[in-house]
Image 1 (cartoon, rainbow, N blue to C red):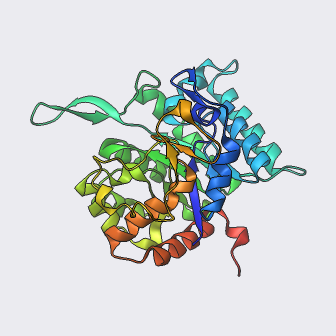
Image 2 (cartoon, rainbow, N blue to C red; image 1 turned 30 degrees about the horizontal axis):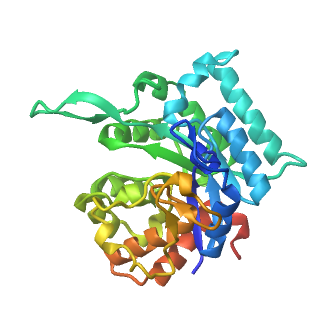
Length: 330
């Protein structure tokens, strides 16, 4: 089987051996990429979530013959106002990075605009008086900050004819995102789009699918019975797979846990129990890796009643059409 992981945070400190500000082991990006390739992960898309992380992602993409995105995560949008030339200057500098990579003599490693979109919300009262999630991590970027320049960031897809890599959490943020996409007259002809790490309902996924967007599935998409229903009902033609490593593993509390492959399955990787015991050739418990994309594929296949090989090949085709159209055989 062959796989394509559309979301790997390879710039995260954990892949440098740093956990919660403490150095636990030497950087092991070499091993992470090697294990992924050994497990059939032929494509890895590194997420660029800010101006600096886009630069860092591009360096890694060149070093390991991978691809990356270029964008501003919702929680990083507060950086834009702090730029010496303001938000416009921040976006211009991001465009300079993209232009240099896609221009003459560039590496052409940037293949998507993202991660951009809207986070969760917090503290909104429901009819029953209970708090529900809203635009989360507001201490990083308030809702207004996330919304302020989203249209301009989304329009980079039209400018560069690159697919969008979108972040969207909860019904409230989906309403805002769809509204803005319609306001800018977004079209799949710009390059398409995926809503990554999707955690919404079946109906919410359907709304995106009907607009022509793909749905990115990872361990966070498999947490609840409602999540599994979303996976079950979303057409395989509109599903992409991801690990969102080092995050979003499928834990024992996840609804998808019973659908994990057997312990002796070749889809699994060996891990040490603690970061400070990390060894060459082994992963780290609690840290997701792109090599584990086959585990996500197995769960999704089980939920949908498909052979994992059938699912993997269809998702591969989906991914190639969206992110690697120049490699698709005509």
